Length: 124
Image (cartoon, rainbow, N blue to C red; front, side, top):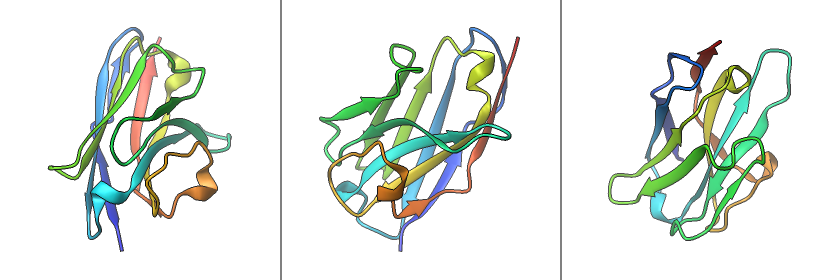
């Protein structure tokens, strides 16, 4: 069983930056593809970014391409989401997810484990 704990969410002004972290435990992190999803009030949970087990493959939602960067440190069992040029529409709860597979996926149903989420609020 994999446990995921997100951190780093906070209130930030538009144009600012944040780095989210997701620490994994209880499994073989280096064999899990990872993803970040987000959910704004009244909306469905949506894909943000994903990374393969090795970090060589990444996928980004069009809405964050060029602004967000995902990375992972398998030695620390941690995946990161660097968010730059934040916009009010990025406001959401951000969830880290892991799947029992090495290939990244943009589909949330492919993920087996989820964190509790961290709140990101971008003020205009």
